[in-house]
Image (cartoon, rainbow, N blue to C red; front, top):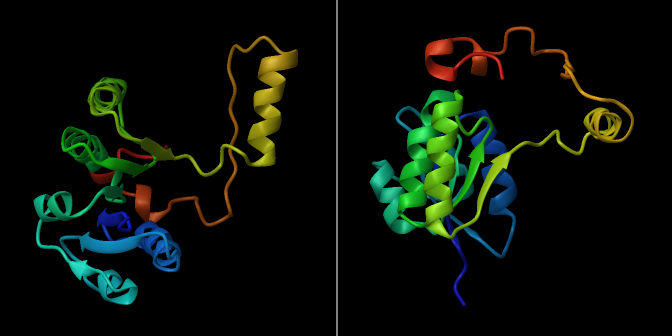
Length: 166
């Protein structure tokens, strides 16, 4: 059985985190990376530099969507329609209408679709979930947790590109 080939759409910071971890995993091959500005990530993990989204979709089994937030919807739908397994960085969409469009495409695809909600098992969120489930009748909640540098992070700085804060 051949290794699943993983392709990246987007080569920013979080793509580098995911790709460097996957490049050390002998079960998979980081095969192609497409980004309109960066080529360095592909070289650092031994992947080819793809020249289009279509090239990544044609050559890979699994697609990581690590582009700016406002691009997630269309790329997720395209990957689902091409029957690819998808890991989509959060958020999968920047609005409820687009989220429903992604959901419909994924339901038709019979493939795995995962959103990178990396904080869902963090103790503060696990406790909040327990409280809302077991002991409190929810009406509203506001939780903010960050590493300290997220007052105005670059990856949410321009709402036209990112959709704004999550």
